[in-house]
Every structure is written in structure tokens, then in C-alpha cells.
Length: 262
Image (cartoon, rainbow, N blue to C red; front, side, top):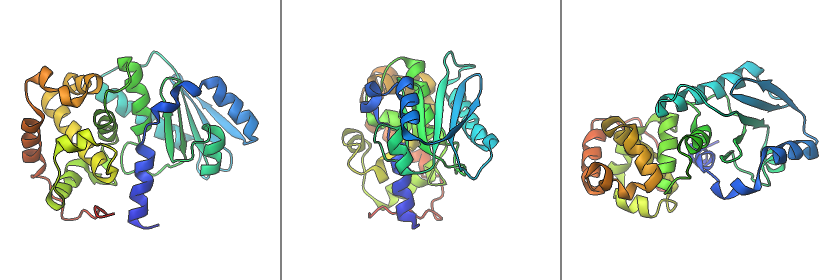
């Protein structure tokens, strides 16, 4: 598979399908599994139940380690000690299995946040924490609200993964701004226009805000929209962008190979 194809697959993993929330419950998950005739084995934990489609090449402990790693990362970012709910995490073998289990969705991964269910095509090897979809779920239950905009929501989730396409977030962002003219405001206002740019840029920008201005500032962005951040820290987006650009310019990007022109 080419690197260009890999990045598109990764972007699909990252998209949160908020519109599907009201049509999917744990009961629906159970019914879909039963109707599909697919065979799953289960791994139970205090915080989650993992469903693993049969014929996976890895032992159960690797799947549990992946989920636990994502959970620990999410809790670390949000500075919470424990969860007060249990979630389900489903690993399927293919897009066909995904379609049967996830209400005809055929992508790489999806989070039904209200129903506390994550479903993804099994991937054990990860260049980051693999927390993206689970982070969407956990932050929703932590804040009690859906995100105000795509930039804050996806940026926070990309930040939770720690890397983008195997590279440091700030390195990728520095590569992008040195090879393409962008304004943060434009990315915010038209987030879905070019997701090859918007996902790593938002992840890097949220990482910068988190590390300089703290968790509460990013939570404000998530709840009220990043465009309204000025009301919380009294700095406009263009001021924050200047600070962010000064930060990321220190990160080397010479080894970055990324298909910006696709």
C-alpha cells in the first residue's frame, strides 16, 4: 500500500460519526452481532468489554493492551483517575464485518459516544497511542456535551494519539506551513475541506494550547468552539496562531514525507 493510501485510511479512522449516535445502542450492537453470524470472543475488564472477531492473528492480551493504553492516555490528558461507566470495544476483521456490526458504516473505525461503543477494524501496531476513537467517547461523557466544532473535537482526539502518520505533530505541522499557505481561521471555518491538512494542523494547535494554556482552555474550546477562545484567555485566534507558529518552527521536518498535493 502506498503512503498516500495509508494517510487516507488513517483519516477515515479519525472521523467521528456523531450523526449515528441516536441510531445505535448496546442492545443494537448485541443484535447486530447475533444477526451477522460472525463469531466473537469476549474479554472483560472493570472498565470495558472487548469483542474480538474470531480468526484474528493476535492473542487477546494484545487487544486488551491496546484498549488499556488508549484508556490510560485519555485519562492522563483529561486528568481523571477513574471512569464511572463501562464501554464496549469491538474489533472486526474487515470492512464487510464493520458494515454488518456498525449499521452499514464501512470505514476503519467509529465511536458511538452516547452508546459507549467503539468499533474498529483490528489494528495492533500503532505509531501513537491509538486513543482517537476512545477519546471521543470519554471526553463526551467527561464533559456531558457534544463538541462545538470539528477543529476542537478532532484536534483534541489527534492530540490524544500523540502522533500523526507516525510523525511528531509539531513536525508535521511545521512541514505543512512551510509547504502550503494556510491560516488557522480558514481551517476552523472549513474543517472538512482538506482533511489531510486540517487533522494534523488541528492536532498540533490543540497540543500547543493544552501545553501552554492548560486543560481548562482546551475544554472551553471543545464546549464553546475554538473561535470563542478569546472569551476565556483574552487572545484572538490570530494571536494564538503567531505563538503556535513560533513553537512549531523549532521542530525539524526534513524527514517528513506527506502527500499535501493529493
